[in-house]
Length: 351
Image (spheres, one colour):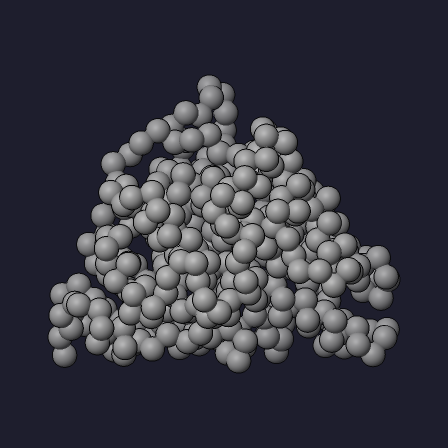
């Protein structure tokens, strides 16, 4: 999915804090904090073998027709406030404004943290808490987009066969191209495969994988490239060179504009990558049995995510259990009161 086009107008400005209201499809509010500080470069862990070269995700996937809403309905997904903080303490203060603790309650503030601040000086428990609180709203937001799109697929088929040249046919054909499903939209196989691919990923599994792949947000490719999941690219202009890349290797670590883009790419990878067809089949079986999606069980389909195979699966499942991620409920995003943030966050704001 291409980035939402927006236009911005400055609302407030201070020495360190600037708020910009972004108006457009899927309105976004951006909170930019100047003076971003990067950690010193460390050795980069070897990224997981996510996908084969011929499976690399395209830079731009097919656009939906302009009259079709895709994951941006405000009654379903509230405007996300994009936040950049220069320190862990600053991010903790922002979360405190909205009483956002870990483990979370039934609601999450619609905050989209653009990049991790340095986390190295935090205790282990503090680092885990801040890491999970930063990523959970992003995962919930991207899952909601998938679920809304999945619902739209069901509505398109509600009256049986889809009429030729209809809005429903255009929607299904475009989604088929986007999620790599071929065939006639009226074939049962097309419908079943599209529904297998357009679905959510359990937050427990996504959080555990992000923690594992990014070193709890401290790896070089997370700090410098917002790459949470060790995604590779073979295009130099889209990545950075791994410090321990083998002689003769040509891959790069993919650069993302923000953490949410990395989460979006991860969901898309799980939903279309050939390596994860077994995982998608397990997910479909859980849906058919009216079960909630289980990250512990679906992690069994991650054997090909890493060259470590079953050892990687065991590690992800252990991280889910040890961090009680399997006990996460189904929190919903709630709108953020930007004025409350300005009033409560201890930063001077100038007229």
